Length: 246
Image 1 (cartoon, rainbow, N blue to C red):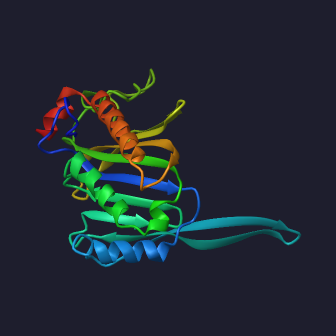
Image 2: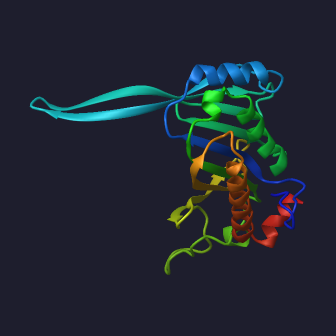
């Protein structure tokens, strides 16, 4: 998975998406962010922009009965590379960078975030950040008759009385300590070509205190989160899973 010093480097890492996201304390000038990145990184993000939306539902109770009102809210606008493998997303209070498979390695991915931060308007670069998030989504393509426990170390055993072995699953855990919040999901799935696969989705978030994109502190925080991701990934998989990435 990683190019972290002293850790394994896999020739064919199973990462299908990686995300770095910064959250601002206050809303930022969205159009100015997009214009700056689009103009100064045009060679990188030459694809057609597209918007991401979220549907919000509000239920109210009146004498005539419950009423449901659905509204569509724009979450962010994405600028993407010509091949669609690299994206930067700008929202009112967020800046995110994304890479899709094939994963280019941590240093190039981190460089993508640094590049985007460097070209933003000064008003955005000097705006206070509240947190940074690092997310990795991995897909392990396995034989159709694969036994999940042969590949993953984080699954419960089927209850007594249930057939063995485990065939389908979806497990999600959340935890937090003094510095970091984490959410980890693992599930069985099928690929687009109807092959068996296991998916893991690991999200680590850490607060940023008195930090802006113009200061170097956020990079050190991301390095720490990346090291934690590497440790989590290696603890999640077995040697049989590792053989898939060689």
